[in-house]
Length: 425
Image (cartoon, rainbow, N blue to C red; front, side, top):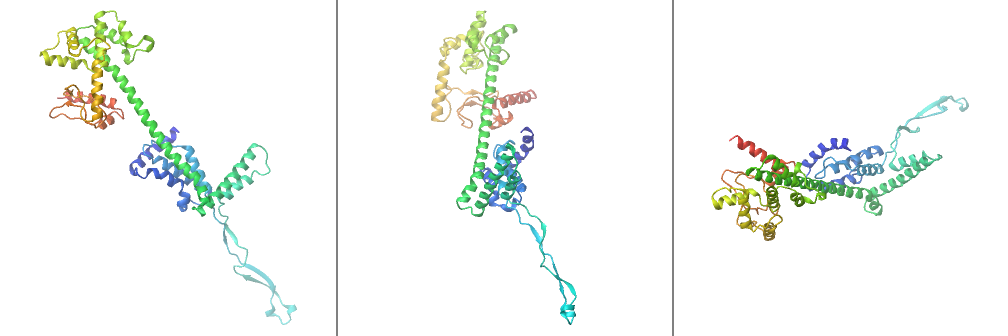
């Protein structure tokens, strides 16, 4: 199937662009009923009709929205069979011949007994000459296939006779239905092409659903990886700011379960148990503090900014920052979910009512640019954010397109682009 997909994928892209979406669902039905609706384009022989039936079926599949060159070969085979069974065949073509008659010529003799024998030519009275033997109809073709196995023994011969007889009867049903489409015979003849076309639409929808599911799973995996990376970065950022060594930082990140981008498995008791295994009390307290803050969707740099706004200076130590955090938010240690619950409840209330989210009177600080991961849905315009003159905001569709369908990958690439451009200023 990979070989055919390489061939059909460019075709499906072109068809997707030139065919309006409104008529795409009708194409499988038009292809299936082409032998009845437009017999003139199908040819007369079994082989030509089989080729046209299969080709039109593939065309109808490729034209469906979201098709990436995927073909249901069973459906294509049924389309070819339907076309073959509708073949009307053609009569043999003949040409007239002359007839020659020999007899006595009484005009040249006085005595009839003495009349000479002559040959007379009678134009057009001879036996017609076969110019073309004609093409057998579908019924004749398949019956001939069955007759060829008559007198033979064995499973193969029995299978040929059964297949030939069955297809011959089906072809007779098709012929009766085409001759009188608005009858019981016409209804019977429409069953196979109708079922084939419906199956094509179901296959196309199932493929779109599968692609959407795969995309969602990729986004979820990317978000999971990005979340772990951001946690590890937050731990590193905070510990570097307060003078921890590289080895101490790596040990804390590893103990928190984010080494090499992974998570702590359940067999190790999860992240809280891993944090408890850090021997250095100060390092353990720091890792727990940063990890808990990250779980509550409150970046540590936001706490630092709040501190600077209130005291007009940077915190002198991580301990001072933690004390400020505890006093302001009533932080009771790792596992405190008070802030997270407050924010989530606010999100739910505002999402139900519509309008902007309540971020406790604050806004997302986007003065340095960045990705917006929260909000009810795309284009809802419900996230308050700080923006400035001459800044430019990308739409969610643009972010997704930059990431080849993944908003997380798109955000990563846009960050890279922003950093490169800022470096040129």
